Length: 342
Image (tube, rainbow, N blue to C red; front, side):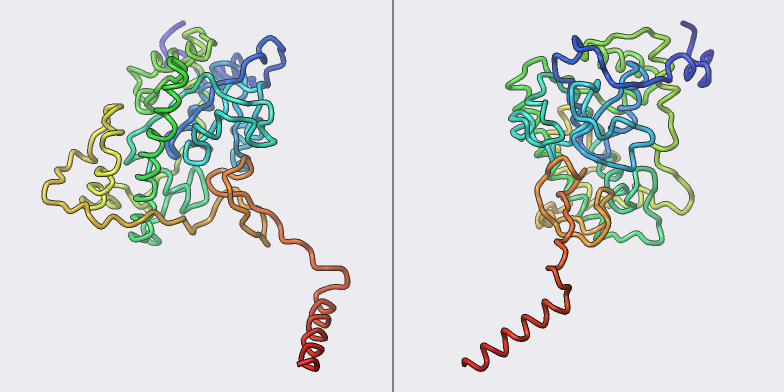
């Protein structure tokens, strides 16, 4: 195969653009690896890479309708897909290793193989905040509507989640499945000098090695505008959002976990003399969620497969037969009766 520049997107699409579910029973004997990542770490783009590199769809423990266009396998969680997306903060090790945990993934009891995609936690936190605040995988927070307090609350919550990801999920997984987990840095997949070798190592771990040409085409085809954030002059930047005080507080939480994969302090800042006491407790995010069903809604809690980064939602029960007015009339009559008896 020639250099990447000699390949064209149309030629790659014609030869490697088809993606499908796995239908061969022999390939369905073992569960696919879990693509287990911290939010904002490039999971969606990596799924596209794996799909075009193998020709098979990836699945998810969630049901994110906004991803059905670029990722048609989003609603699949079975042995018919080549990998399954999950986030440790909604699906920690104790949950995914004691399946089936949800009807959608009823055939999956555990994941003997895992792809642990990591990213600089400061970059991943900013990316996830943008997803939360804009209700989109591609939009960015506008500078005009940016609220520093809201951002800092979310950043601190996510800093704690990053620490818990390693301590409650990754480390227990490595202990039970030595050699089963492959740690992959998102930055290595984006680096033109490292990405081919990095993708090859992922495919080898999955037991699906591919040709150099197909891997090069996978990078061309995965360059989809529907999975990348749009940047313009109105967007808030992470350089402006991160203060030294906030970055140092976050670093005091996940520094040991971050160093394990070679990540350092934001911009190399020195935290000497910066107070990291009085860290605000993690609070639930009150912004829009991309997986909520149309109103009216009642929060049902939990971290099941029906919602991506929050609990599941169910519709309110319809009013009793006879309508709301009849219900109110019965209640009024009951109150009058109680009054007469009193």
